[in-house]
Image (tube, rainbow, N blue to C red):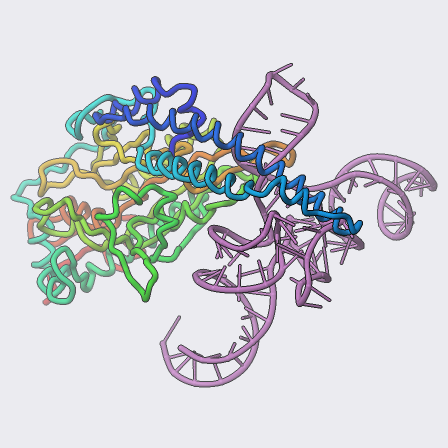
Length: 428
RNA sequence: GGAGAAAUACCCAAGUCCGGCUGAAGGGACUGGUCUUGAAAACCAGCAGGGCGUUUGCGCGCCGCGGGGGUUCGAAUCCCUCUUUCUCCGCCA
């Protein structure tokens, strides 16, 4: 959420930067006006309330002393009603302001790349060259079916399209990958391990910015009269660990690595990535989350990027780092890097991780603050999140990049202890 | 699923039946001091946090007793509603 105070002082500048997202944000000028009105009303209401408080106190005092009270009562006869009328008016305006702010995305970073879509993202660096084969490489959807490690038909039978059964060494590869990633981040990189609830409430989703605007992407559960949602990304439960809390500034940054199964409706993705397990309704993901001081935010972002890259390096997968342009930037984020892994079946790079700084956007919505020391005022933290990595897509990358001419798949060295084997072959 | 009980400031806890002198007793912790070679103990003193408005500033005001709403001139206290926790019974990995 935007800071209304910043908006008061700098709305032209902020609107200008928001419009780098290629949308119209002129309605924020109205918000500034409503805000002025609210403050005028507030002053009036508070004066009335002060008067009422004072008079009521006097009534109590008079009663104790046995004095007549009717005259004092008369003097504030209609004050309650007046207060109510003004309060309602104020509430109405506040709601309008709030709704507008909740629907407004984050302000892109000052140096953000202006662009309309992913074609204008900027490649920062590359690791390894695209894998070369001396045979025709197979896409993972063929390879995995031949190896009998993924079963698309039965996934569809059990649940529906975009659901897949992992089987045999396919299932083990998935399990090996998340154990491996959790180990690297928790043991080597110093993150605290988290397994959060996979069902979240709407407060949590408002806090991280999935609601109110992106309800269509979420699986919703109605249980009696209550509404729950399936976790769309570990970012949601993990950022919400500290909703409505004041953290100890001395203990920042807080670093968490969170393992979840993520559920997404992929409502706007009909026809995209329909083959294989690139885009599923259900997938596993290891997610890095940090809460830090505002001045640390961008150093933390670079550090997290390296933490994610480390996984790809250890797995010896070719990838590149891109910085997202404003047209491709998620609504809650000020700056985002994507890691894109080389996929022979796409003959291109494909997103496997996304590492972002939300600055204070989520912290303000979630009310997550810190104190530098005991006597200082609370300030909003920066929240960062990054994949470390998406497991399903890592499975794809390994299958496709490590495949051999005979249809078997070598296991990356670092995974062998987790897999208890060094190759996936067709079962006899 | 059934039956009860509870939620007060950093922690414990009084107040809630019978609304006003509770902007919240008391204790612990914490901070400062006295005493002591030093420490402990004892004693003295200080001490709710947060949000918002207004002001050049000192300050002033509004809102906060789990959340939301209501009754009232006035609510920690009365009413409605939601959430969470605990105890017992049932069921269960």
